[in-house]
Amino acid sequence: MTSHKNCRYLLSSLSEYVDGSLDEALCQEIEKHMEGCEDCQIVINTLQKTVDLYHKTTEPPDIPSDVRARLFKRLNLDEFLSG
Amino acid sequence: MNDSITNPEFDITALQNGDRAEFARMVEAYSGQIYRLALKMLQNQQDAEDILQETFIKAYHALPQFESRSSLSTWLYRIATNEALMFLRRKHPHQISVEQPSNDEAQPVPLEIVDWCCLPESELISAEARVYLEKAVEMLPHSLRVVFLLRDIEGLSTRDTAEVLDLSEGAVKTRLSRARLQLREILSVYYRERVNIATQAGEV
Image 1: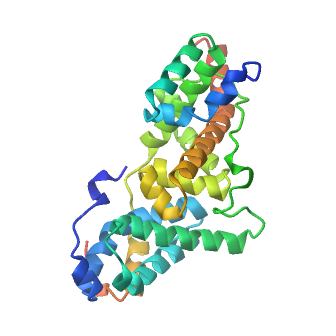
Image 2 (image 1 turned 90 degrees about the vertical axis):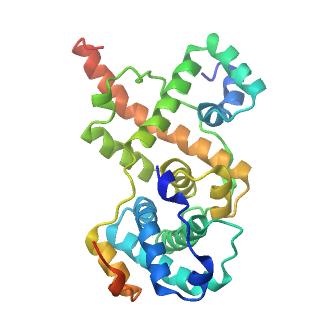
């Protein structure tokens, strides 16, 4: 990857690229570059997968019932503690 | 992600007047998110619980000054993040603070070039892989970890994350990019082994 001097320059845009929030011109530049650079394809694919994996494995927020009970007690909200 | 509970309607006036039932409703709505963030930032249940309690105590006292420019959840994230970062600074005084740009801004050059995307889902999110995913986040420096957690785990926008951390949107993007590239690097080391094992077994 370091042998391609464009790669380093494009690197800082990859995160926005996988979010789909990069401007059109830079997107095209990345896609054009990827056609001829297998290493960059792998970096982009695995970066995308990294972000997807975290999104996929993030559970809905949850709080253990004992932690919740102590929080309500500390805030003097015991009377509102239900469920 | 938490889209469904990001913006429940609260009676701000009642909250500012010390309405305890409304405050309890707010605690109920946001305590899960705040606890998750604190836990992932501090990796210790007792410390996370302390930060959770401090956040809502501070919020209760600061509510009269709350201006509706930001959403209630962004405001709570801001209090919680400040508490957690202060805690980390006390615990690890040598670590670079979140405000300090230093060499954080440079993007790490990818070293691991292994295509592990082809691994089956059962490998990518196995119980063992999930532990590794968590560990990888713990390996990030605080200044990058907090940005990653707010953006990719809590699902805040770039703008809200910038507001929570008092950073420019550009700085948030740069740090998120750096965090994700580092995570990609760490995960590649783990998944490369899985690819090797699968290849030897003739599965991929």
